[in-house]
Image 1 (tube, rainbow, N blue to C red):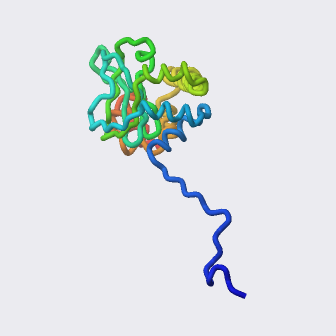
Image 2 (image 1 turned 180 degrees about the horizontal axis):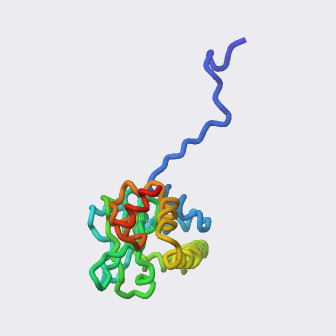
Length: 212
């Protein structure tokens, strides 16, 4: 009998599918967790997205500027901060890989931002104009549902516990929560940046670290 495969292994009827992780694939993986999107909606959204790299210390939005864009962090790191009346820099958020960086409140009200969002590292993003995105959510119901779910999670469900934690939790508890939320971020930050985010002094942070 003649072998159909000439002593070679027969083809696998169920070949392994190898996924290529590109920046856009990472973006879709992230946003699809909020709500599934149709292929048509994805294409419309992708049409307004552009790739850009911010150099270290370059700003995505500056305090006093009306913000217009949203940036998905592909690689790198942003911090969001404001300058207190006494001159202290107060960091409110970090935006590492897979986070969406924006000054949301100011963008929604089209008013000057109270915050600066600055690159702490050379940072590559996928960004889009918020006004163009808002036009799309009037056309595509699945994108509107995604947007609503995103706001619910990050501006309602997460925000209140964070405000309570900052007011009532001990500095040690806030540091532990920071490590749990950002397990790989600490080596990328300076001590004073972590301290600013936690609302403590660098000296206090040194003591907390020494106790661990």
